[in-house]
Image 1 (cartoon, protein in one colour):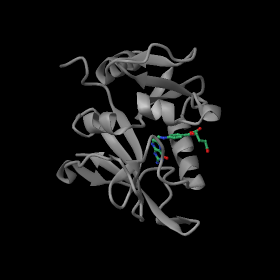
Image 2 (cartoon, rainbow, N blue to C red):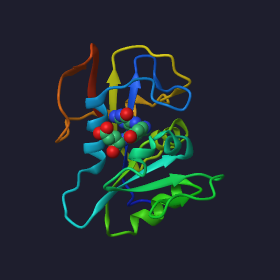
Image 3 (cartoon, rainbow, N blue to C red):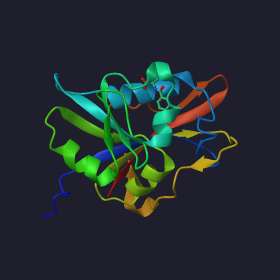
Image 4 (tube, rainbow, N blue to C red):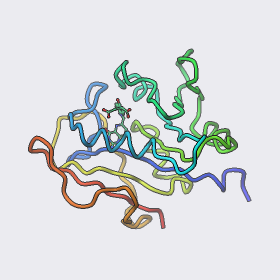
Length: 184
Ligand code: FOL
């Protein structure tokens, strides 16, 4: 039994048809309802008096608009070896595993969400403790300079989850679908 064996966490990402997640430090698209889904899924808890934690890399942290940062109703956790300071209440760690270990011991935290970017996604898809990938497939190609990593589909199965709308969604002519992949 390893100290990290009990730690389950999820990934959430929106990914374009060409596998992209970002361009020049921002999201390549603006899809209001999709962002609301991100907000709801990462915020939702079963118990009162607890919150979820959102774990992100430095670039993702810096990409969140000032008015939404830190993300409200969630414990914000930044993984960076170079940042010296974060606002009060925000947690700073230099490694994902260190963050997971200490967040897991915190009884006031319900679920752990890795919210990007590509560096953390890349670690997560290879990590057995990453149990679910909540991926929104956006059915359009966008110019991107950051991509979601390839993951081994044989290690996952698609699953139906509570609170995840089914079927094709559409906003301003952009079609997208909410998918969940569960590690086998
Ligand atoms: N996952 C999904 N499904 N969609 C995303 O857009 C997404 N984005 C990130 C990570 N996973 C994702 C990282 N980028 C905000 C901005 C950028 C960002 C994540 C979050 C943000 O401003 N969020 C506010 C929006 C509130 C609203 O418009 O409803 C929040 O409170 O969550």
